[in-house]
Length: 458
Length: 100
Image (cartoon, rainbow over all chains, first blue to last red):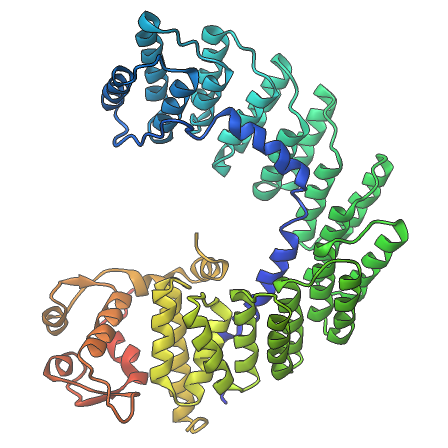
């Protein structure tokens, strides 16, 4: 085999990225946040009774539809009815039109039945006035002056989330949250943490810290354990473990006891650096501190150990986690397979697939991609092709790395036509964009041609 | 959203991708074949490849080889037979690098 052109060398172990996101996906959003989110959503309800789809975002059409709906209804419309209509319309229309529709409802209703917009009516308007800070302000003013409601914590939350729907308006969101805290009430921890998470993702660390300091000094809003988890996660993602350790110290100084989410996040950080022994140290520390490891902990641990070449050690934890009452899932097995494939033991990984299916655990597309990649690397092309058939039958998507490896393996064995079929499948199943699928194919064929000319491949 | 590798490829090498997806004014033989006057290199490849598939032009004994019909011959240097391997290269010939 000839030397790989540099364009191909990058395409290694895509699986790594995927499976590390899986165990990590949980830490930042403890269940408590989700619970809290639900009642908020009911505040601006998805249309319950009459679910109407407005065909056009024009105000005049909406008004006529609304009028016909009211006249066809015998019983006087309820507040829920008004709100759901407003909700469906504001999903597609501009904020100004939504406000006009509400005003129209107001006028139309005063003759027959009463329509007094309640807090949630204004929240609907607020949630859909995402386009700019001005429209949010406008909705807020309307709520205060017309409705006589003073913005509460829920209002703040909705307004901030609406503003944050595009990352370009984070500065406005910061400004708004300070304004609302000054005039009405400071945000609750959910809004606060949400904004911090957005800032962490899209702005520099300095911005985040100055926001935290401002909020602490001006309104006494202090970061809590979730905030610290978000901050630690952010620095771990940039592989800055020293800062993470420092934050862990700060957190303890503030009187918080790190929970499993914090430890999982730090563990993930070490996984990214492939430092198996450090990962293990975190696990031991958890045991010492009496923090109970959860399934994410075990998955991260097994992933980290596999990644740093300690598959045997990782396998031991399969038994330990089962004892602790957590059953290995697709992520666990995929991490292990990944480790085995790295060691060149693709057949062992294939056997693990059988074992996992026997235990009633369904493999996902990531599992298959890992295996495909491993089999092709280990020059077990026939098994790889077999596996690909299964993937095709299950409509599973190919990942960039396994796609590239598979193509190269096929071409190396002179099966160009089959490589074209794989290309077709990648395009059809929308696994990759046409461009990247083609770019890989072209590069592979170019490389093959060169290798043929040099007599390296027959 | 673009996958991260794609994004990297674009930011690292915008020209390489541009010559794949930019629309190009076509020379006459290609114009007759495709029935349109502008296409990107990627689009052109897709059209030719699907033409091969729909007309069953792959050699039944060796799928890696394409037996060109008259129409296909006209755009692929008049070769009676081509290998699938060289298809991208042959198509690229119609899309010369623009002089700087």
